[in-house]
Length: 69
Image (cartoon, rainbow, N blue to C red; front, side, top):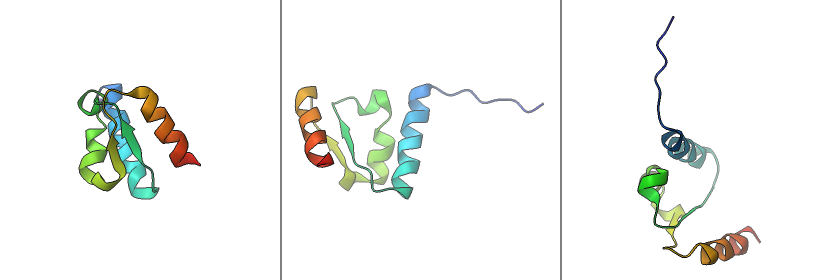
């Protein structure tokens, strides 16, 4: 039986975002946690679609709502 490679959930999240970015025109907003949440993987591939909003989650939610409309 093949050995299963275990990776952290957050690494899978970052890798999945980067893969989705190749297929769909998604935008990623971050709150100064790109190293922890592994969204920096997406940032490296698509720097023009990555926005670091700083430690201002309420502002980030308003930005997300504006982008969605």
